Image 1: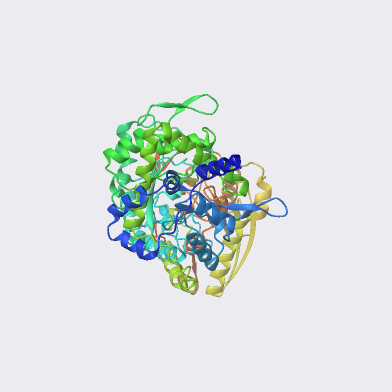
Image 2: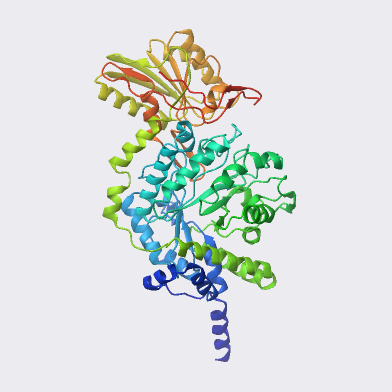
Length: 622
């Protein structure tokens, strides 16, 4: 009997405690004096409860289906609700896999909030707009670089307002944006159109306007990715980039938007990049190799520079810790500890939680941090500091767990009014880079067009909106479409000529070209040889024309369909291709449907990077 009691006592002493949900009346009383209330709340927390406030996991999937495939987590269940309660989680991030439509999203978030351990949860997502969007049913907006092409702070603010309006009515209270990276490397594989510009001042102005707009609703922001992710040549989802930039250049370029927006944003998200000029310390990777310290794990960058030099008092949030830059190089638990010691307040996606078996890893993380904190007083202090900063942010911003109304959300999210505003904004973004008398192309009563792109979904989207133009103008547009690997060299000239001959117009939709796109160049050459007008539509980054010759017409639309590596699923930007196609044509009844108004927000350089082919501010019209 004595042995049983000892065992039971051991289980109780080593298990995580359960806290009580703070009642609404008490929570509102805390709001009246956030600083004092924060100390009261956190000082009464166990170490486990404090750690919980620092963690923001995802539950992108939960369990598997009958075929062994991961099942998207779209409906709350007792297992996950118990995890949230037991581990006192303070935050959760949701992804596109979690979000099916408005009623389901509201129900899911309401249920997650009900399962909280104590304070209301931060419920976050990455609704940047454009290429990175999470809502399947929502008003995406055309994206940051598209907004950069407008130069309009008003349209940037409107974008923030629409995002805040919809997100808040769904139950989100944290949006990870805007991106304030300066895209000064046109070969950047992960930022690109997610950036407003390669001009630090324009990035600052539009980001501040976006923040002003979204803050009209109870949605917090996180500018990202400190100390600047715009000058990388590899993707941090898969590897750890090193930025060979000197400190003076960093201060005059990358730092500028952060300095200009830092006092307006609630949080700063870190970058998994190595910047030796800012921190030249090395750490040991899993393979035993000495490598540079990623900014996410750098006390020099996050505490000495961001916290102390820039006097930032808001939340510091890691980028996702499951990204290859971190997970391939470091032990997960160790990386979480180092991120906390470096100065991060919230650890985003510290480990995978997609089935009940993964809970043992969560136990391991808590046990590891508790054990380390017993002998490392700095870690114990940092956990306490960050828990207080998280709680203070929740109280200051009156974060609540109020249940959201499905009927109201359905009236707001992706409403016809919002979608019309989206199209209005996008029509101002389309940038005409080159035009040798090709555009606007005058559609006749009967037209034959051919479409080339490297994906069937892109062709289908283009065909859909060409059909809309035909219906609205009471004309006929016959299309044929072909999926072509632009960078390959597997099309013969005869094959291309047989496709193009007899066509009225060719649409060549390119997507982030690099050196020697052989098939794309052949299509251009054959169209020119046969005097068939052709337009190159740069459907993502605007730099494609730098890798092509003899182009007579080119527009940039800053987004179409694509695989979003930050989300693991496809998305499509109908507003961008709609406005882009409307900018190509005039019809007998409408005339020019949409006049291109955008100006390049970036320099388009030669492939070698030595010459500027089309400068910042360039943009034609008609």
